[in-house]
Amino acid sequence: MTRHHKHERHQALREEIDKNPFSTDEELARHFGVSVSTIRLDRTELSIPELRERTKAVAHEAYDTLKSLGEAELVGELRGLHIGESGSTLLKIEESMVLSKARVTRGHHLFAQANSLAIALVDAEIVLTGSVDMKFLRPVRYGETVLAEGKVLRRKGNKYWVEITAHVNQDLVLTGTWVVFAVEKPLEV
Picture 1 (tube, rainbow, N blue to C red):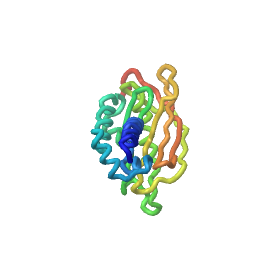
Picture 2: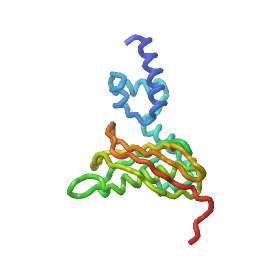
Picture 3: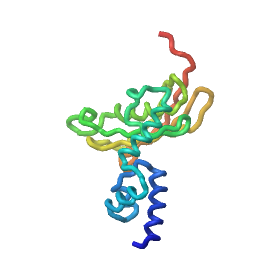
Picture 4: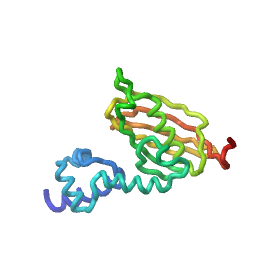
């Protein structure tokens, strides 16, 4: 490959990682039609950290903006968060999350991931789920990783409509619309 082609690939690689910082070296290699070792060499030359380090940096920034939930209350690993706009979490399905016979994830784990993301997107100390219109589209199996992405569709006063989609690789596994409410003052106990 000529120097010119390498320069173009480097520029395209930078753009691709900026667009999707969670791309693995394997996914990038397939995307660019080169070997994994070529992608690793390109990343090194461009001073682009490996996936693990990119993930830590993005997550650290995202957790700093999280207002409505504590870190431990969020189901899944926060990948990005733009309060009032969009965000994403990643959930690796573990043994304790699956039905023993069917080896598929119990639905409440997927719901909890989506629900906590919907709440995290609202800029308020207290956010409550009002209603959910959601569909499970395919079973999620042990060992799979679920990427949930949320987007605030609209807001009216303290009421927010949030769209959540969840994917395993390219497969859509869950979709729904959450209506959540920002509560001004602490609830009386």
